[in-house]
Length: 397
Image (tube, rainbow, N blue to C red):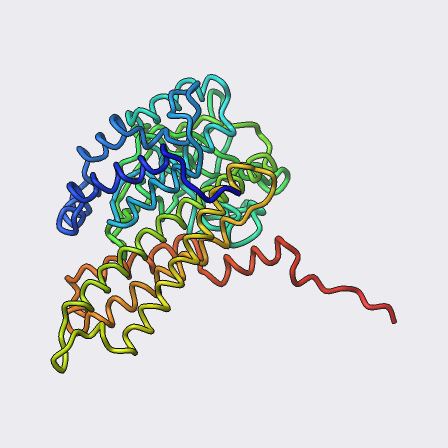
């Protein structure tokens, strides 16, 4: 593995950091998150049309930039530093790879160029709180998380003209604004029980979308209700193929999420160090006290270790040789973000405990991401199970 960045990768980071400094300060982020869309639509168009972020990891044949998951992870590290609310994660890291892996040639030709140019946003709708399981991060993807033939979740039946979906998904990232929904639904009853993916146009009849109140307002979510809604099958009618595509997508998405969390943790640490240099107690800056130095040093080590893990996971995802360490990298990054944001609140003292302070945005991002994609101990446990670390050996008697 060559750990050095290319000139192109350095340019991606530099350009995005400059743009975020100008357009995505704490006040702008809060204001954007509280709009009906949940993000700054003008800034999103800039990121899509001028920088090509939605299609950054998409091949040029389908209108993308032609880079890899590594470049997308580096871009998300910069957007993560400011906790930028945008459809980038849901569109580029979750929906687009699934369409590329599973879609027919006609579906890819129709949808991928529009996503790459920012004309179409997409969201992955998974029933309940099973996103981490569906992506193969926090448990084995057995398909039963989509309803399993019982009430609840999303059910699909094959009609005369098309598939019809009914049910709901409660925690859909950017689901209230996405133009296209990728819905995981159960079909076949008990006889041929299987979970498949379907394309649903957001304006289709029978689609009801309600934005939810969430812990982290910079990560908007929606409840999607499907009432006998027409849908188009994405990929083959084969649950094993769909499960494999979800797991591969989850591994790469976890690397991107890990890089995003590292960016957030790094910025929280930076802000805390800046404050420790300025805040005086007993006639000297609190950053000069040994106890404070030790706490900040521990955070620095955690952030750097998480950054190394995230970069390796992104590099491994590009190789696609079966090594899936995205979940482990995400666990380490979420741990680092939780530590960095918690220490930020503590070391900012009285002002850090006020609800309006910026440190709370980072703490809520850490908690929200762990609820959506974790928890951390399950990410690590599933990675250990997948690697066979704790398989009991048979002992001859």
